[in-house]
Length: 188
Image (tube, rainbow, N blue to C red; front, side, top):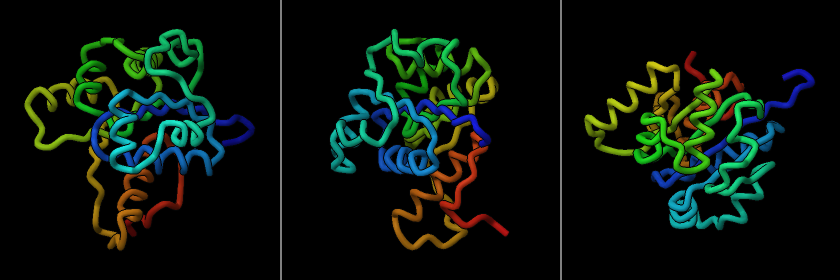
């Protein structure tokens, strides 16, 4: 990384698999990467429901926290330089808003800024089954260079625990931004 600290925007929305978002924040903290966290209202609810983690605990895992409705936050401007954005998990509501160019909240706006500035955007989508609408929105964004990483871990490295499965996904997500980790065994 050199002398420059990386700066990553992290969005957590209401799609299931909020455990991935928690693990990502912990990994970025261990890597000493500056994080700017935004959590949707449903993201807060699902994180509490699935992980028994309160919003204040989630906030403490990030360097900076921005309220979902604060469209004047630094991450809402292209002049605020970041190395990319990860939305983990990414609900189909958020996917649709981003694909449609809507900025209804700060996660949408930060994603729009990431796209317009030509920065890396990674969406860890979570839904099953996928409708034609979901697939078309993913295709539209993929054609713009957005990385679509469905929340579906591999099993070729013989995971033994849920934590192993989570680490596989978090490691693969970080690969999309060129961030190397030792969170999982790579194929040899």
